[in-house]
Image (cartoon, rainbow, N blue to C red; front, side, top):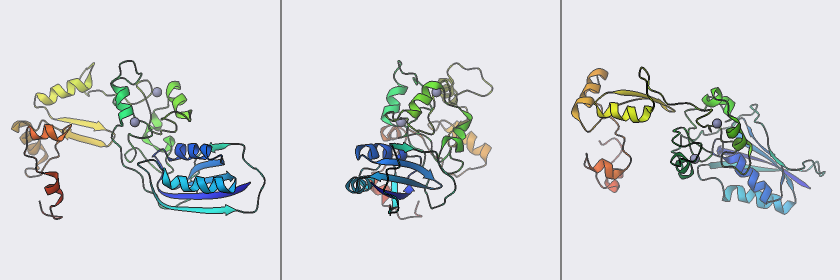
Length: 277
Ligand SMILES: [Zn+2]
Ligand SMILES: [Zn+2]
């Protein structure tokens, strides 16, 4: 039996990298473990020479779409040829190692999660904080690396049994999804100072009425107002004392934006020199 220690640096935490390594190890007949070590991912691979070679080639070739490998070191362990591992495992993280790592940004909801949100038979029906290993918050919930739930702001929301089952199931797309939750165990939406059975719908109505709302979400708090009328925007400018600042506009797609603004060809927008408004 050969053994190798593989260290991977880059965007490798919070992107479903460990479950991915687990599946890759299984398909290449590799035993050992993977764990987050400080800012990097450490893999101990035990198996036949050829299998370890194929495994390490696959790591770069088939990596998860959001991940980015900046460097990968393969170091053969030559002093022990006994079989030490019975299977391949995802181990608990260890904090005592440092290297450079990049924490991924928050990711827009993926198609699989959207399907659940709009399926009235799904337990996450209409639940706005639905996330999985492919999507959801990262940067704004991480307090420290290694990226594990206990070092994120989701720590305050212990997983319910159903979520825990998904989190521990290797075949599930929420396996080790650190920000996963559901209506039973996760954060809830509510309107401050107002009784509401449907806070999102009521918030939309308040905006339509020209009110200014502060929406506290995973990425901090946004002040929002209806932009298709002058009064809510000028009220907000007045109160913030920002008379000339361009505000960000939110819209579901470019077609919607075209109904209230002129949209240039995207190619032209990209060709502006830096610093030229
Ligand atoms: Zn998702
Ligand atoms: Zn849950």
